[in-house]
Amino acid sequence: MSPSFFEIVQLADGDYALRRIDDDAAPLVRISFSDEAREMLEDRDMNVAKAMIAAGIEAAGNISHDIDWEEDESEFADSQPHYTLH
Image (cartoon, rainbow, N blue to C red; front, side, top):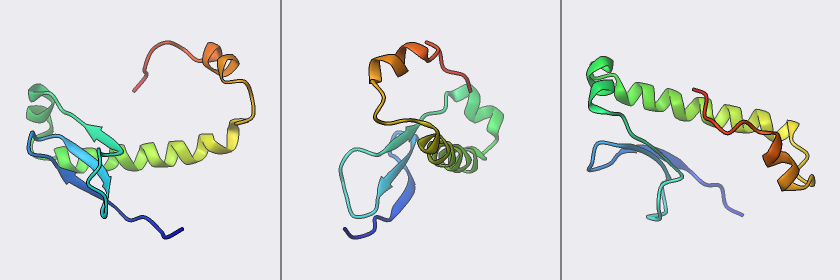
């Protein structure tokens, strides 16, 4: 399998996305900031989006070692909280 290269781009609607360079399919990750958040970030939204994507990739790499992928998915889903913590 050939290696994939990724890029972070700003979409026409102002959102940021992580996508494969050689693929026009839907982005792997999409980040939206509200108008209020953009105002607070003072033109640093691209840097924050990059940091969020990097943190997500790192976190995904860390949890992939901790999860028994053979475990029944329903048992795993029941043990997870039903909210998102940022």
